[in-house]
Image (cartoon, rainbow, N blue to C red):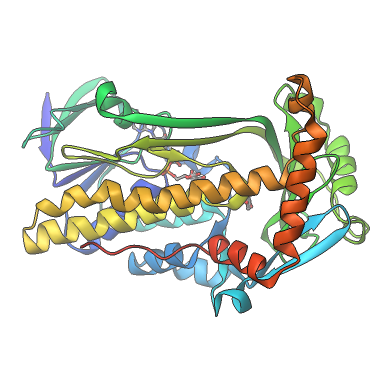
Length: 404
Ligand code: APR
Ligand code: PHB
């Protein structure tokens, strides 16, 4: 057994683990990342690309914001549409100056990986059988194997940044955690293409045929989504069928000028709301997708991960700079307050914008009634400045909470 030591062991090199590692290193707090797959595999995942100001600030604090500042696009508004009626939510005006940054998660992940490597910080890729031990003791450690050799990493704290399917959450004994979950009766079919975006800002489209989203990565790369039944397979959707359906769901004056082209990537993702409480057990902290999942409708997944990172970062600074270890017990309650806000917003946006008719009718419920309630609620919000502000302030992201 090869034994090494660090202050904070980080499980997972997704955005949560990489951002936390970079911030801790800036404060002189030693950390090692253990990751199950290769860096290239991680960069092959296509994920959302809307960053709240809080995330952008953290990236700057970590010293990794240079390319984001150059290539990212600040969006001052976002559109919602109901069939052909378009409503622009002026984020900047309604929130008194806040905006969001459009910059792909893949890009920010690549930037952080590069910065980590340049700083000479240790990341063990392709670490298998990662196992957390004695997390509720004074001497936690992690074992793993790499190239057939067994390793032990002794540490003071463990950050479980290993996503929804990781080992960290499962390390918390079942009788010490409660999991809350809602699975939605449809999925999102996503398509990435090297075509110019159809609109300067994102369009979330509610239609009688189902939901659609027009998003983007750059002036030449677009990302589109369609609500599809969970039984659909990617093979059912040729590019041609996708574009035809998208045109029927986007407002007519947008579809008219939609530029189509071959897909670079196409995949179906289920929608889920999930929260694990508490997010801390002994010396283990759950961060990001390891603790919570939101449906992508509010673009909150990555942003909730960032607020967890911000809270853990503040705690670790206080632990190592001020030798105050009591503050670690604040982690879960601070994170969960913001997490549940993001969960509720994502659930609300999902309810508001998707078509539930098929599912409700299949269960013998009068689907049209629910649809009318949702449509009326959405119109109520969109036709009032107060309503639009409620959407705007959540879309740009609620403030981060400080430690006591
Ligand atoms: N051992 C080591 N690493 C693991 C293990 C394991 N047993 N299980 C999973 N991992 C790694 C995964 O390979 C992945 O690279 O942990 C990483 C988790 O990354 P993400 O799933 O991207 O989660 P996170 O970093 O919290 O990112 C926030 O919020 O909604 C989303 O799209 C958003 O992916 C983003 C996420
Ligand atoms: C994306 O660009 O992939 C995206 C944007 C906003 C969302 C979800 C996904 O709400």
